[in-house]
Amino acid sequence: MFIKYFFLLIAILFLSQGSHAQIGRKRTTLLMGGRFDITIVAKDSLSAEQNIDAAIVEITRIENLISDWKPDSQVSEVNQNAGIRPVKVDREVFELTQRAIRFSEVTNGGFDISFAAMDKIWKFDGSMTEMPSAEAIQKSVEKVGYKNIILDSVRSTIFLKLKGMKIGFGALGEGYATDKCRDMMLAKGIQAGIINGSGDMSTWGKQPNGKAWNIGITNPFHPETILAVVPLEQDAVTTSGSYEKFVVFDGRRYSHIINPATGYPATGLCSVTVFGPNAEMANGLSTSLMVLGKTTGLLLLNKYPNYRCVMITDNGKVVKSKNFRIKKFKTKFLEIK
Image (cartoon, rainbow, N blue to C red; front, side):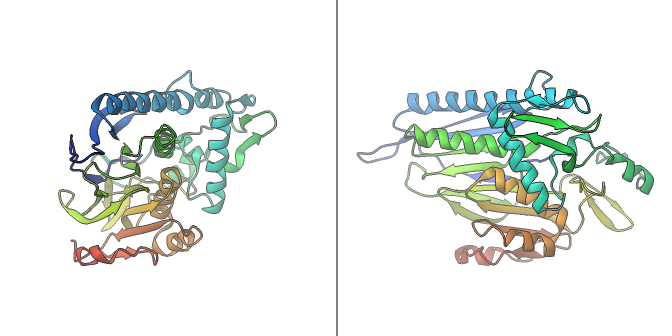
């Protein structure tokens, strides 16, 4: 559901000068159905590589718990028993589900982890020649509805009330995995790095040259160019966007990001980038803002003052939340279409 929308502008020095020399190493691999770029800064190359290995092990562990496409995962077991019985899951899976449901509540269903049951009636591969009927759209979300997920905290069980229901964490799970890896590295004394799961990034520390990590926001109308560069030291960032997958009917642009409450694609915004301390939360916000639109989305973001955003509308207007105050880069937000 999510695609990488960042160009990560990293200039890693493999050996920096001075008595506290640090080595940077980066590795790209496929995990959780997408691309992960793992960058670790450590005292030497062996330590950096070993900690990249440790991050991969951790991401794989999480994938084996929450993947809805691995038939032996706990989430798949929950889905297979929809309408039949509750399934006992690890506390980690239970609490991740619990947080996702709370977020579904605050967005009034603009975000919903039961979106996995949605019928794929919208096609974004160029094959659609007309909109689906209203009846088909309504039917496509019949099995979607977070209110039909029953949690039992005492027994640590998840029960989907309706047969055919499914839960799936999608890129929210990638954000969670990047946060877990960052926390693990900090606990191990690794002072800098980036875990980038298909555009959901958790960063900490600085580059070996002492500079902040530079994150580029892609211009959705010219994806080969950067709209602005934002420095991060210990922060997370995610982008949701429609500029690579969309259809146009009667002059209106329909995103591949579907409103799980209605079955209709998001309209009005083509890109939302959210910055904040936690990639899991930032991902939930960026997806929700795409669905809710500019006005309602900003009202939602106001409830989370530690998070800030940049939105780009379908007509090319750049909208920033009031707490997005990076004046140094203000001049880069020009006419972008």
